[in-house]
Length: 265
Image 1 (tube, one colour):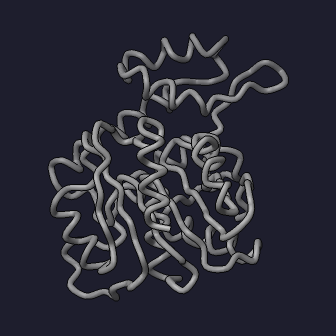
Image 2 (cartoon, rainbow, N blue to C red):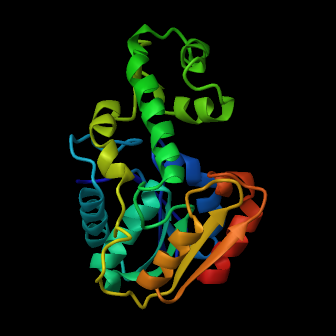
């Protein structure tokens, strides 16, 4: 699949992969800063942003999309930065194509699946979001205020609603549509919630590539037991915490986030 992207700067290639419901646009400010030292590629993953839609949405297909992208652009081993779902795509890619990865940076996600009470809560939150998006018919929306009001009952958190509503696009005829492929995401939520390597798997190849895992203080996407798995798969990995942040830590504390990135590359 030919992915939509933005390219900034020059130097060693650095690829940023957004998370679920996100797009490359969410990373422009970070990408612009990093472009002072790198050739930055901000990618829209499949079924997001301006990239094509597909009924398939698994980490295997997203890994293969990334492999095609790197080959198409003739990129040397690249720094990979992936947030949430994008972090799992990056880990999946590193597991299969480690020679194409210069440094792996994973933002607030672990290799494990949602198979404990904490991660089950996160899965329930995503299922609630998907149901709310499915029930909102963009054709019936007159403006974004309408859409926000319709989502409010199912999603009371204003910041989450505003993040989701960035995916509404107004057509030339004045009608709205989702840039997200909502139905494909709904049908593939089990795949999206799955682990890259499940914790009960007893054998796998450890990856001796530099890796940094950045966790937030207030989200629960990287638990203590997840850190143990991270170090078993990525022996050279460091896990650091950015205080005072939730899941979108790159937007909440951009200076600390950039400092962490630059310490790894």
